Structure formats: structure tokens, C-alpha cells
Image (tube, rainbow, N blue to C red; front, side):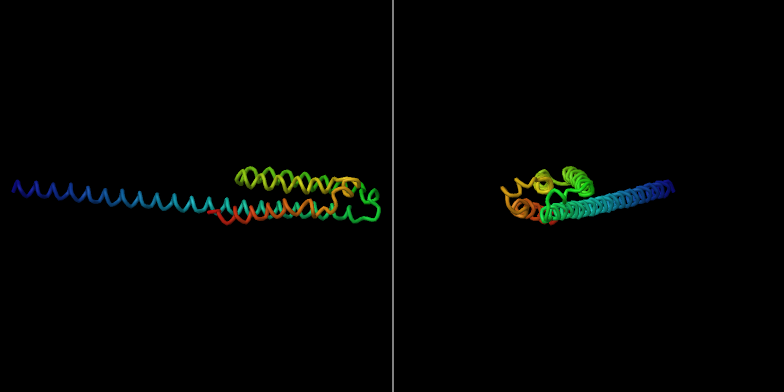
Length: 162
């Protein structure tokens, strides 16, 4: 009879240990899966944030180019520089530099350098004077290189996003 008690006791202990191990393993696996899911969600949120920033940066640079083009193509350069034009240009440049700083925060240093060069080129063509226009030629000659380099860098950087 004593053997039967010990066997029962051993069975209860063994069953308890197996139950504990099963629960421990299940909780651990669930924790790992939850961690992987949260990591994937964070990566997707970061990707979306970065893509939205690229869209905004490109839209702002385009607006800056458009406003510079309006002034460059005006028949009278001085008359084109109205107070409204200056206010719009300042607004665009402020937004452009904020977006450029956000590129520095969310992207690689290489991507930031490309964004900085492109933003500087847009800033330059927006504020250049008639004598600079005559000396430098088309604003597109000044913008083409930085624009293409930025877009190529963005394509590469976005392609490597998780």
C-alpha cells in the first residue's frame, strides 16, 4: 500500500510539472509572438511615416519650384516680387526647411545630405536675383542634379525599408 501512495504522489508531482512546463512554454511563445507582432507594427508605422514625409518634402519642393518659376517667367521681374509673392515664398521655404530637418531625424545621414542639397537648390533658385539668373541660366540646370540624386536616394532608401 505504501508503494501505491508513493506512486500516486509521484504521478501528481509529474503531472503538475508537465502542466507547469506546458503553460510556461505557451506563455513564452505567446509573448514572443506578441513581441514580433508589435515590432512589425512599429516598422510599418515608421515606413508609413517616412513615406508621408517624402511625399510632403517632394510636394513642398515642387511648390517652391513653381513659385520660383512664376517669378522667373514674369515679364517684369520687380513687379513679380509682390508682397504676396514674398509671403508665399517665405511660407514655402519655412515648410521646406522643417521637412528637411525631419528627413534628418527619420532617414539615414546619406539621405539627409541629398535632401539638404535639394532643399538648398530650391532655396537658391527661389531667392536668386536677376543678375544671378543671367549668370546661371535656367533654374532647371541648377535643380536637375540635386533633384535626380534625391529621388534616386529616396527610391533606394524606401526600397530598403523593412
